[in-house]
Each structure stands twice: as C-alpha cells, then as structure tokens.
Length: 205
Length: 281
Image (cartoon, rainbow over all chains, first blue to last red; front, top):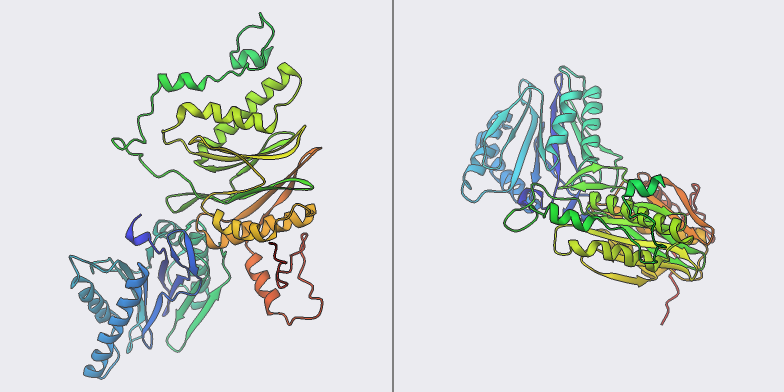
C-alpha cells in the first residue's frame, strides 16, 4: 500500500470573486478501517489564510504544528501578518529541508492578501514545489475524481455563496467515488470581512 | 434440445447418470494457461476484494445480505453492484472476492444446476451445489482466482448455508460473514442472532450489521440488499441506500429518553439497542 494512501484524505481549494474557499474531508482511517470522523485537515495560519494538508496523518499534524511555530516567529519579527505568497515559500522551504526523507503530505493554501485582499490559492507537492493557479487546486487520494469535478463545475468570478455551492458539490461527489476519503466535509469560505465555516451532510460510509 | 446444443453436451445415447456435469472450463486452462498473477508476472492492476456479505439461518429460513460497493485500488468503481444474487428459486448466493470471478462462476453454477434439474427432474441440494462449485473451482486452486461465496438455500432437509472458497474450503454453518467488512458485521451478528427470531427481526439485524460494516470499512458502502429464502423460495427486500442512516441514528440518540422510547420509523423499524442483550452462558 502506498504511504500517501495509508490514512486517506482529500483537500481542495477554489478561487472566486474577492473570495476563496477551502474544503477537506473528515475521515481518519488506518487503511481500510475508519478510526474517527472528526480529523482536522484545515488549519488557520493567519486572519484570512488557511492551509489544508492531505496525506499521512502524522505528518499532517507535525507539519501544521511546525509551520505554526515558524509563522509565529515571523509575525513577531515582522510585526505583521504574512502574505499568502510568502507563506507558500515558507511551506516550500520547510518541505524541501526534508528533500531526501520527506513529509508525506501535499498541502493546499488558500487565503486573501492582508492588505489588498487579493485572493490567492496554490498547492505544493511533498518536497515543496509550489504551483499557483487561477482556478482550483486539489490534493489527496481522490485527486483524479476531484480534478474531474472541478473542471466541470468551476467557472471564474463566482460570488461567495455560489463558490460555496460549487466547492461543496465538487467535494461531495468526488468523495463518493473514493473509498479512503469521506465521512463528512468541512468548507471554509474566506472573504474580506468574514470567514464562514460550514459542515456538510455527507455519506458516512 | 436447443439448450443442450448450446452447451455442447454429449448426445443422449445412454440414460443420463447422476454425475453428468459438463465442466468445460478445465479444458480452457490447458488452452490458456494463466500467464499473469504469478510472482514472475504480476497483475497489471489490483483486483477488487472489499465487501461485506453475511448469511445466517433462523427458524424462518435463511437470510442473506450484502452491501453494494465494488471498489478497485481505493476507487469506488461501482456503487450499485449486486453481491447477493439468486441462482434458482430456492438458492441465493452471496459473492466476495474478485467481482468478475464471482459473477461468472455464479452463472456457470446456475447453468449446471439447471441442466441437472432438467435431466433428473429434481433440484440439487444446497450441499450438492456447494460441492459442485468446489469441484469446478478445484483446477484453479493456486491461481489468482478469488471466489468466496456463501450458498444459502432451502432443500428437502431444510435451510442450509455453505461457504465455498476458491482455495478449496467448503464449510457448512449457521452464520457466516465474508469480506473486508466481516469483522464489524460479526460483532453485530454474534450478539443479536438467535434461532427463534422472526423474519422482521432477522432483517433488522442483517441491515444493522451491514450498516455498521459500511460505516467502519472503507471498501463497503452505499446500499444494502437483503434476501430471505424459505420453503416457498426466495424473496427480496428492496435495495436501501444507507446514506441517511447515520444521521437518523444521531437524531434518535439526541432525543430525551422516555419510559418506552419509540424510534423514528421508516419502512423497517429500528431495533432499540439501549437495553443490554441478555447474556447467554
């Protein structure tokens, strides 16, 4: 069995008009057996910045904690919130430090610039190669299914409510075709003045 | 007869013997020896194996149930597969293992049983059908063929379940669960199955067992099929999607308990698991 599919999981982020949305499933399992249905894969890293981590569960927790540590030091030294693009470089650097014994995660970053509120999404591979896109990013055991759903459902300049609907449908239907992800979905929609967190009613098998 | 011509049976020069089973598949092994599935020649992709099927006997007959998810290397390739299928009017078979193998071998078994019935005017017993299937699978022992089926039938001696596996196992029993979700199903069945159950209780237990297995096991899911085999033949319960079951259960648990708690009903009532099951020594 592949290390990346040992625990299963899926995260995705989409860009809309002056907003971004990030979503993840909630399953934590060990190969075929589900252990809990409330495993956090989305972590706030700023007022309007989230990172989603899919892959080996232990690395999800370790990387999110080590990243938060580095981020706290940055904010203390700089005296301001980090920009999403800089945060992407920070994640890339953290992952490349382990180039020959990597963390088995594939992160996805979604956020708004703290000053201009420009939406930003990107994903990285497990050794830190960043990829910035204009539409959507996906990561996890059902990435092929998620790519298919996003390609067909996404359109540019979606308002926050429509973006929520789009990302929800993309996640739910992609997860239904993956045995190792699911057990609920959490969606954060990040706008200039508010962040809306919603849990979706999904198949629990 | 047209059927015999299609099946290429020998001509009826002498009266048919009771052991007159045509098993052409053994020849096909010589013509096409298995080339893949050996250590020197691994399979190009992983075959589907995950499932939850169960079968048990009780005073009302035999109950067979299964989920409907067919998965392949982590992907759900078919959310509405049929894992429990009737072979003839009084025999139902559950399948687990490789989907293609199970589908085909069920058809081959059904064909041979039907031919026997036409020639000899009576049905093969459940044990006999199991032995026939075991015999037909014997040449493939050691290959990557994987069929794990429980044959649930009603014959002259009453209800019977036989578990047949392509590695040569043939077991008679009163309760079986097969597949990756079977440990979870066994947990529910072992505490609730009694011979004196009614058909409705048995259906509820089977449904609960499959639901728990689909919740915990990644490779089981989607819907549940339930068949009941009695002396008059098999009957099928309509396929039920278990999507809402989790939320229905959460709603039931959140309600304040009264002296006689009534669970929220759909067509099948839910068993109240709050009372401890009377222990048996």
